[in-house]
Length: 50
Image (cartoon, rainbow, N blue to C red; front, side, top):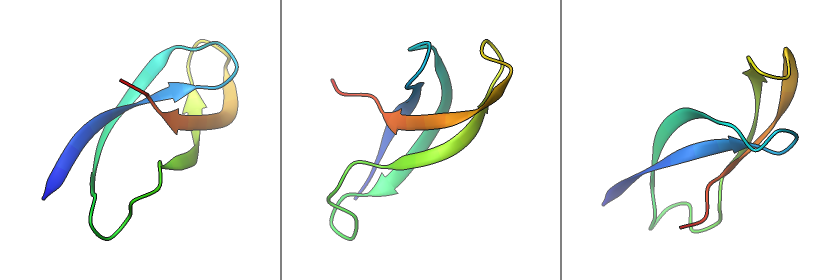
């Protein structure tokens, strides 16, 4: 089952991206380098906790 979540910037805490993942194949939270428009740089984005 795929679940949707949002990516949150580690620096400014802005929610920039929406993604989905298969919880059975990837049980850990996702972390990815993405471009943040507020920081104007590539920063680490983590899966937002509910």
